[in-house]
Image 1 (cartoon, rainbow, N blue to C red):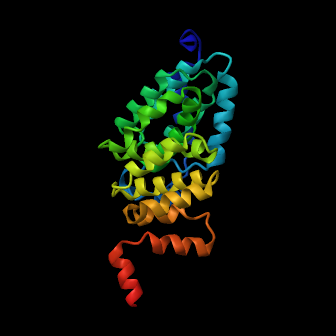
Image 2 (cartoon, rainbow, N blue to C red):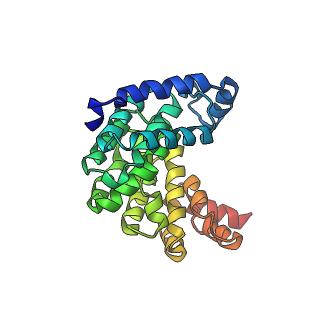
Image 3 (cartoon, rainbow, N blue to C red):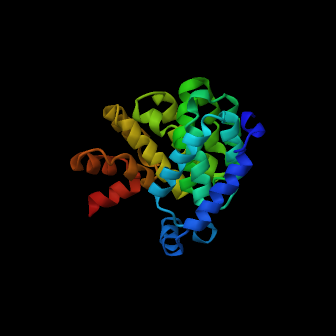
Length: 261
């Protein structure tokens, strides 16, 4: 790597970033931030506001871009993603995406490895990494969509959530919708609420480019759609349409009971 022969290697940068995080830590804000996660006992955060982290990323990127290449950014992720703190995971993921123009295809398998290793062991870490990095990889290497189709069947909940989140921006733009809906169907049997919510989010974004297709899809799939997923998916419909979809996709027993009442 180019940076290995100069000051500013990934390991040096990682140490500096973590020292700044510790210096700026806000314990009170950190406790508040944990409330957004069910896995409170495993969540660690310095309590830094998002703007402070964004400013740090911009500053570091400006200084590093003359001496770093994409492999250095990947190297930083190798060091900081396993770190238990949210800020470390988010910093390395966002900085990585700034090198998107030079993303190699092998990065996909690196991200898969990070996910399977539970380096992204909460919804925030998965979303920050996959929403942007996978979006850019899929645009550059569209054949990778065939690889992600396998993710809904992983034993790892974060890989399954990533299957949906990786296509959020793609779906919003109305691209690869056949794959988007295929992945969504594969996730219907998942009883993990964080996966169900991500799936509903994915469908909602798909509807932004073709709301009629989303409506037809939901009505066709009917009662097999988890209600959590469905409620997220229909958020962009008007109230009348939302009620209609909720009624028509009820399990048959519930619909019969509703008619009697």
